[in-house]
Length: 207
Image (cartoon, rainbow, N blue to C red; front, top):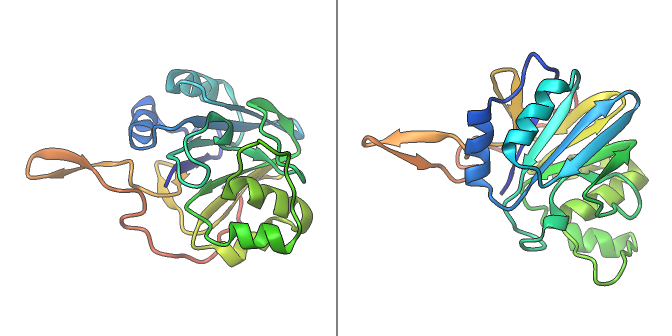
C-alpha cells in the first residue's frame, strides 16, 4: 500500500529509525521531493541514509515516499513522485513545477484514462499514480477529491497539499501507520498499511 510522509520544514523531520521502519514495511523503492525556490526537485530510489542526510540539509517542505508494488508491479521507474505533466514522465530525478505522491490503490484509474483519452509512450510502465498525475495536470489537484479514499500529496511552490485521511506523528503527516511496530505478547509485528485507517474528508491545507 506504500507510505508517504509530508514534512513541513527542518524542525519536523522523520528520524532515521522511522525511515527505516517505513522502508522495511514498503521495500519496492523510495522517493523524495523538496521545494527549492519556486521549483520542486525530486529524486527516486535513494538509500534511507541519503534521504535522512538530504532532509537535514533542506530548509523547507519535503515529501518522502516508500513504495510497495500494486498497480504496475515492481519497477523502479514507478516509484513516486511523478511530475504533474500530461505525460507524467518517468525520470529518476529532475525538477518540476509540481509533483504527486499517492498511497492506496485508485480503482478507477483505467476507466478515467480511457474516458479522457490519455495516451503514454508504448513499452513504458504505467500505474494509477502516473495516470492521476497526468489527469491533474489537466484538471487540477482538487479533481482527486473524488478519490479521497486514497491519500494524495502534492508539492509545488505554494507548499504541500493533501487529500484523504492522514496521521500526524511528531510534526509530520503519514499516509498510514502500518509501518509502526506494535507489541503483541512480547514480540514485534508490523501492522498491514491502512489497518487502522478510515476514509476521511479531504485535507487540502498546507502541512
